[in-house]
Image: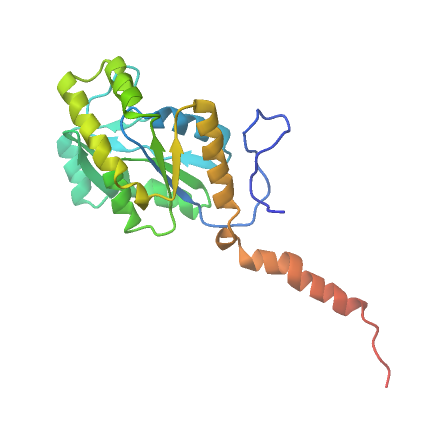
Length: 240
């Protein structure tokens, strides 16, 4: 059996993954993209709360906070001049201009966490994800789909934060983003939040159990070389 965190039926709620003693490995980068209004933010909050050893990377943006958003929680909200200063200092792993605002992923904290063996969740738009795919080959790319365009339109209108012109523009952008689905390794259709969360948890578990992510040295020492050594010790010596 794997030494990685797994879904447990102990004192944790169903679907929550607990800590286990694990051999050292580099952290996995999980990238989640979705059209605006597909429920990505809600799912990301729930996956971080239910998966042990997962750190949620917070991006920088030049847009204004929406009601209920906090600086440093949803985003780091900064002025455009400061954003471009950070670009000049190469502080972003990726950055993009989306819906008239700038968004960027800070490089150092993300890389530091992965070097420590901590898995990282990054929720970004398709444009940013494609940039990272050119730089980080071993990341896991997940795309969240809304149930349908009609439901997505209703969600955007019900949110009340965008003008009708902005909603039309976002819906057109959805078609462009969905066209990039082949760049992603997994697709989750978010028509039921509970089911979508289970599917996301399954992806996180499966990726942690992949052979290529195992510490081969630890595996050989623990199961192969140790067994060979004990077998040699038990062999009676022959007397000539």
